[in-house]
Image 1 (cartoon, rainbow, N blue to C red):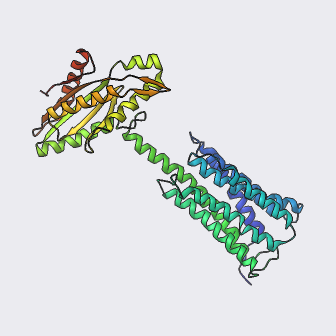
Image 2: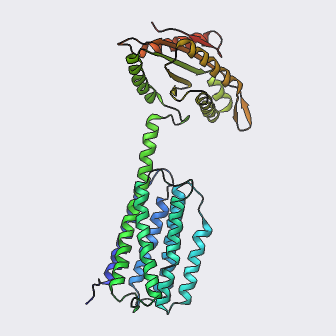
Image 3: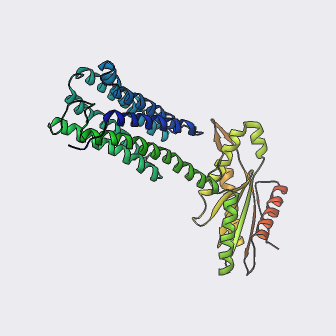
Length: 386
């Protein structure tokens, strides 16, 4: 006797797995819309689909065949929607709705032809899942972190493969077509795969969101959220590393400390969104004029710090004046208004001896910045560390 499992049991197992995963995903409640809600809704529809499959012969055929497969097609449409929402893209309504309509109409037409329905199921759902995989992997939105995406894709690919193979086998009369509730090897593989796909792809989707959250956490551990440049923590870590290297090599090391002039007036006059825009504008202007080995970061508030390894103090002063002039010559555009921006800069630098620390450099740059502000702003002052 060929190996086969009890079909109603497998169908109910898949329905239970879908419902459990939907509940787990609903409990995640991410802060931003990442497709989790759409995926959970798809699993709810998947649950209803498999309950209706289990009721085949006990409820009208339009419910267990046409409605059930329409809901299954809706499930796959929501997979595509979840991928697009995860990527921050608009939902592709036509690509979502057309296959659902096609699936519903064809199943209504061939409601009494099980072989034809298997062939349709071997084409329309694989196309829907193929669209989801294409959206995930092709184009500029493909995932940067691939562990969860690979697991998610493997589950969908397994579903595509088995549905396609079953459809071809039905078309070539290579499998028996007694009906959904008749157990055979093909049915066993198909519904076991459906059970595995629910778990594997759902865990993969959760892992996709976790991978991205972890990547965001790593990024913001070292970057300022407003400007995108290094934050204070990253600057201090870089100072530890760079100064230790400068001490070993005996090379010059310089710092620039910049402060945006009258920044409070920008916030008071134009609002805090404009203030954030000015911060980003200044950061971008600085980054565009620095070497690859230099580092700019937001030290705090409206203050920026520029690390200049291998740069003598006179070179740092020359660069500081060029940066000051660049900021002054490029006003910040915000909501159609040009906001004039200037910066004051304090420079400090020294050839570091054994045992030197970066704190005297930082204090000297801070003193020089205070002198620049006191002398009228929009200027550069330099002080050697003591």
